[in-house]
Length: 124
Image 1 (cartoon, rainbow, N blue to C red):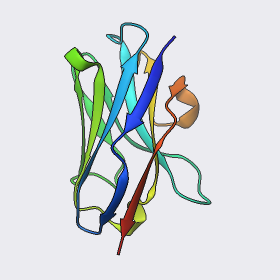
Image 2: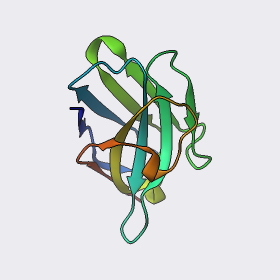
Image 3: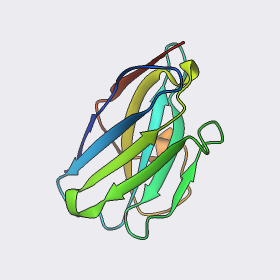
């Protein structure tokens, strides 16, 4: 059974940076696609970025392109989301998701396993 645990959230001023981590355990992730989603108060969970465990191919939501970078460390079974130039509208609970196989998946229903989320708050 796959388990995901996010960490690294917190309070930061606009323009600042945070790095989120998602530690994965339970099985081999060699065929997995790992994604970050976020959910702001009163809004639906939305796609942020994803990375292929093997090969490292990445893709991003338009709203974070050029500011956020997703990466993975195969040896540590951990996926990261480096967030720079943060804006108040980035405030949300950030969730790590995983799915077996595939590449360009951005919908909530396409991911099979989720972590518990980590809060990111950006003050103006």
